Image (cartoon, rainbow, N blue to C red; front, side, top):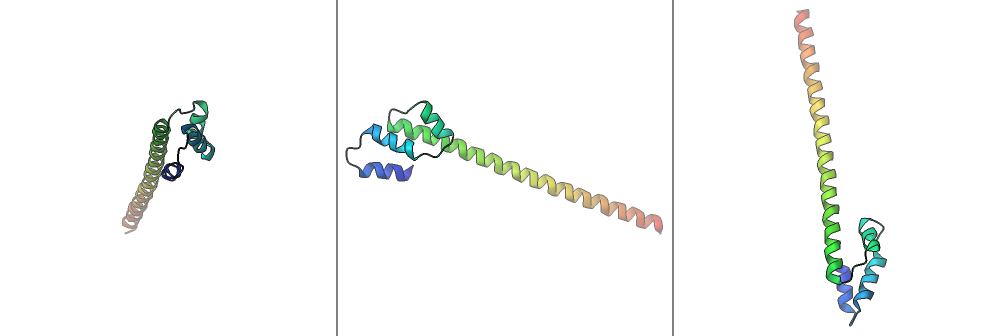
Length: 99
């Protein structure tokens, strides 16, 4: 978005509609492009607001995925540790019963 804004400022008297169309044409396929295709923005501030909304949604989604992965890894580690403890106790019981 930063690069887009800079490019728009370099073009003197750039019509708002041309700037919006340039942005739309440069978007990758995804939720933002789908939203913009459904309801075209009418001003650059509206474009900025919608872009920020989708950036925040994407970042929140990435954080949830990361947190979920961390919990999964911790659960696996916890299970492994628990398994080691059971194995260790079982080994101690067997050793003491043999003595």
